[in-house]
Length: 204
Image (tube, rainbow, N blue to C red; front, side):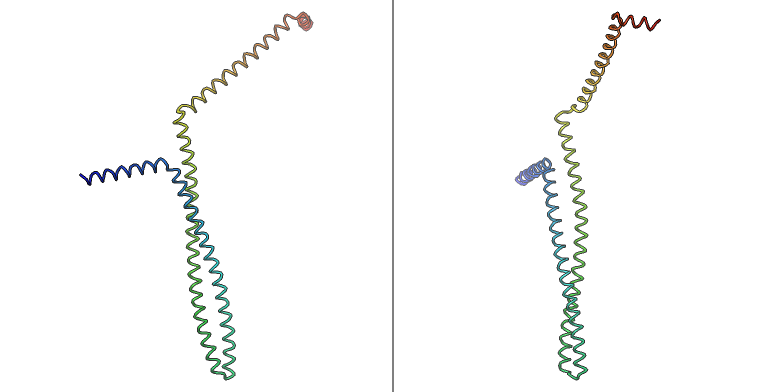
């Protein structure tokens, strides 16, 4: 019995949580979109930092290559001059620098792969975020329309019909006024002596 009570309480808590989430779905969605945008911004900063580190590593690698070339030239010159000990030291240093060069190349490949992965993730995330933002705008519009219908169930159609009826009455009144003015003008011409004289003259 106790287990059933615990299960019932847990069920009601979950139902309440679901009701809250449902009632505040748009607010939750807006916050989730803000969180997504912040995560994308953080990913952009990470990509920018990785790019800067790659540039730095590339310059470091170029320096190592130049240093190896200079040391090789001088080591060969020392060997040609019979300075074997000095040439041996030069060769040891070149070997250590070559190890650094190889490590730098590994780091560059790692940075390049990571940057490509980050950029791909960012592009995909930006596309999904734009879709979410469009969906949010549509959801807001749909909710506003639903709220309007719930507040005034027959308002749009009834208001349009009333406006059309008002326009019809206005046009009918204007037409009646035009006909009345024309009839009045005819009466004035008929009852005016000068008008009658003019009409008789026109008739010969």
